[in-house]
Amino acid sequence: MSTNKNTEYDCNDPKRTSWITSANDSGCDFPIQNLPFGVFSRKSGPSEVWRVGVAIGDYVFDPAEVWLQLDDDDPFFGIEMFDEPSLNAFLAAGREAWTYARRTISGWLDADNPVLRDNAELRHRALVLQRDVELHLPVEIGDYTDFYASEYHATNVGSMFRPNNPLMPNWKHLPVGYHGRSSSIVVSGTNIVRPSGQTVVGDSTQPKFGPSRLMDYELEVGCITGPGNDLGEPISIEKAREHLFGLVLLNDWSARDIQKWEYQPLGPFLAKNFASTISPWVVTLDALEPYRIRTERGNDDPKVLHYLDGAWDWGLDIALNVHLQTEKMQQQGTAPVVLAESNFKYMYWNICQLLAHQTCTGCNVRPGDLLGSGTVSGPDKHERGCLLELTWRGSEPVELPSGENRKFLADGDTVIMTAHAGGDGGETGSPRIGFGECRGTLLSAVE
Image (cartoon, one colour):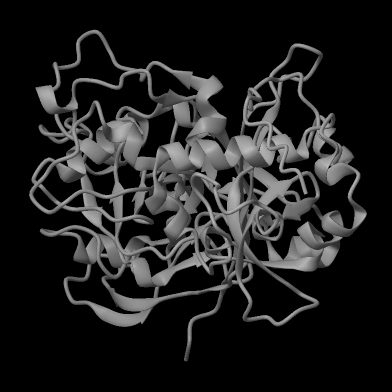
């Protein structure tokens, strides 16, 4: 078969369409300009067969099935690149390979390309409806660092505890972060068990052990790394982009009462280690290229040190939303309500700066590591990315259409995070580059 890969396509051309008609709908998260990567298994097949897939419209495209048809002289890939239970091998291949793969797949799915469009047998093997698959963790995450990179979030939280000095002296000089727990990162749709730990109630000075009473979500964006660096060799700010593959949504579930008791002097530990949820599709930085903006920074902010001074155009204009559906709302048939609408453009430190800081000591990162942004909040109340901020430590409960209110999360609550860049529509408007859902339901604590 002629490969006819058409790698000359401009993958981000907003006028392009696909022969998969659902990908051309204006509200579709996965148009041909997106093509995020993930890992799936077919519900109708052996559940243990996990493979790399690409989201397009209502379908998952199986690139390994099509790459089987390629000649042996393909410059980057054999089937083994995608016939894998994780993206890690693909991530390790580097940016040139990522771009080549995206252009090739984009060419196959283009409305004017007959290679797959007119081959019913190959289409049947290579495409499966999203409703007929299970989605899995897209990467094997070796290490996870969670940052604290939103000035609005840091200022709000600091104001609650230090009204006259909300930001610590180092905050505008470096991206503050801590080492998270990679083993408890789960894919969207996984239930979350309310954790237990030590907490102090009221004015008491003595802790008690029991379920957290102040459960919260945190609206974050996670960045997945590609090729790593050798131990002892920092990644410069100029080269950081070459080591970053794409983004996912991240819900860093947090037990605020456990956090309050334990965080002095070493920071988050059990309050964060029980679960973090990520969305199953990794949206490539190539797909987000049209939505780059200058990283926001005030005129009176201090000048950053040289190793962080660069990549200022790697802010990203990505709309972020948090929805909540309580158990009662679900029983009533009431749709999830929007709690917050924020944007990734508000971040004080961008993704390249996070990686440059992470590795400035010579710390080595590996393909599939996760860098969390920290809670993404904006300047207005409806843009606050967690309940701690939104309810101001519980003093301003959120009223829900079911007649309920929330200071913090209750058992049975489902938190759904969504995101998209673009989506202006129209003949010359930008396509919607969506992330799908990052969903989790809070269950009661284990007795």
